[in-house]
Image 1 (cartoon, rainbow, N blue to C red):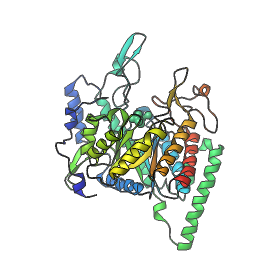
Image 2: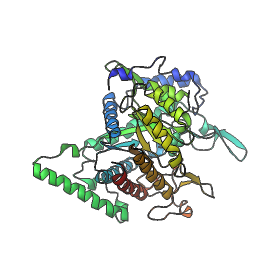
Image 3: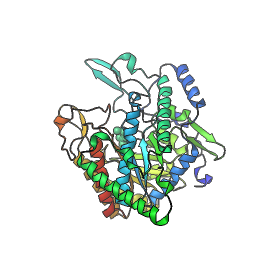
Image 4: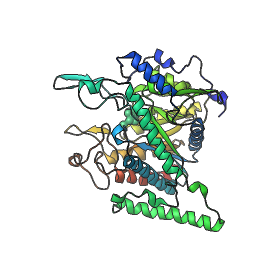
Length: 455
Ligand code: PEP
Ligand code: CO
């Protein structure tokens, strides 16, 4: 990408979003305390570098050309309490395992992007919550306030931004050390085994796939006499919803050697559904940062609105810059996606299409728990590959909420979890995630769909 493509747009400044309508932001009572925290955050070092961000942009551009596939996944919301060795390792393991299945099935490289090291702010459908006649501000994620239902815990506390920044740094530091130390070496996939799943049907199938990949690698290295160095390390990137604009702005820097502004809290921030409406403060902020960015696209978005959004976020039509993550739900995707794909094709807009089969398929059970049905998730993925295939478009990645643990949050899958099973181990504070077995099953299904329908 040339610098020309990413010049700072007219009228944009890191805080120009503050002059637009902004939703989903907390109200801080003490302005002086907020200012002090933002000043401190701005002085602390960045979490990622522009070199990494630019490397990801090149990978997204390659995915747009069908040369690789993006796997983006992690918790709906990270929590400060879960910033532990076990939790980070198990997320990394599940993403690595899924990526091997996808590489074997899709026969192309897979770029892994965690919803991690910063996924701490959540959009909420209501600003407040009432329990037994007491009304308090909604919980908005650990970077804003606390989930406990008490007046003190629900106050938006600016200090939590510093705690979130630190937890993100700790997470990223551990991930980088694992990857640098050889944890992701394709020659040693046994590093990624999760002990307690060794007897599941997915694990057997997975081990067969890994063996095939390892044999291929051996074969290549034996006949060439060379060790494939690139198989020793994998690229791994971070992403989070760029919701908390105070936090995002504080770590937004002008880099003189590139002559543009980068958000250096993460490689790949995205705009969520609830903050992507025309004229929103969030779109204003995103228009001026040079990172590759994504926007969630769901029910009700018209071709006109999408074209407007694309022209604002990517006026130079730069490859790798813009990803659209569609999340319609299994029942709506076949009707609502085609006009959007066709309108961008007609306009010649270069975007990466990804499918989030989670957020359009959320249901509430009779006892009030949020869940998602595995069949619906698969049906949306299947429809996504079919729609893009029929239109000569390309589905270049998937975006999933998942965990490497054996939670019971989504129903269905090989073990046929029912609503009655959900109470057993429901841990998510926000949206229901695929558990280890469900996530592996999804990877296997994508590997199958993708082979037949996507190139
Ligand atoms: C999310 O990704 O957790 C989310 C809130 O998604 P969406 O903006 O698509 O609803
Ligand atoms: Co979610």
